Image (cartoon, rainbow, N blue to C red; front, top):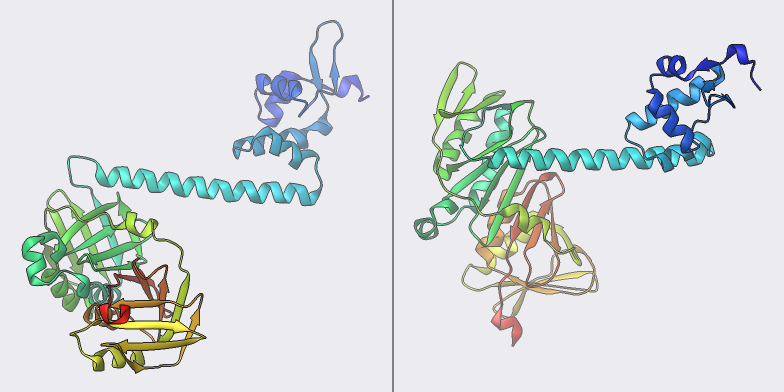
Length: 359
């Protein structure tokens, strides 16, 4: 047993290791940190200097929010066991923090009473490119007349990314940008597509653009110029719910974007275009007859799916790079159209029924 003269009272030991005496009694009861000596008469607990390292580790683990069951493994398990527990706890802590941040940002964004203050800075060319990619997904003039919100671009400002979103109910385009800086609270606003295209032309040659949101509205700053950005008071469809509920892709097609676009354009816009996969081959047909068999990489079971050619062409035109990836869950669910060179841009395209292919 340690020299009784070298032992510390529970109060002195608590001050040395940064734990409350009540916590030390609790860890004794849990068999996590037993005192070096307990007086048989008084029941007083005494601790040895050699126990300081263990006590400090207990404190650090508890400050990190680790349950005692896991803390015991770190304290008394093997090095491999301790590492596995610590890495697992760190991963769960990151996931919990991310979920909490997302929930708080959503609540802040939806608080009644309107305006939040936010300032975000991002690249001018990147903003212009994002507008170019999402703008084709807004509704046509007749659609906008019936549903004005579908003629708008949704702009979402958050700390980690800025998103531009547009939809006409048959397409959904989402482009995410990484801001240079962000201050304030997350917020969102709607802007008419014509105004957003005007912003893109203005921002294209600017090294960076600063977006300011406050109770007076939205303003853009670049170099020595500034401009107000008119917003629209409408409610944008809940696009995030659609993205979150997308089924897993069962079929994937990777094909040359230019070749696919040329084939669809040559087929005309009057009839649906049908894509059929099988035996690592992509067949494209229009009006029931084969139009083209472009080189492609097809994975998953064979599938036959039809599109409105104009809608699919718009999605292809918005992409960048030589290749396009189509992720298909079923012939009746939205299809994700991605570019290998622009992972931050996602387009959803609704398939259609091709009566000629059914015959």
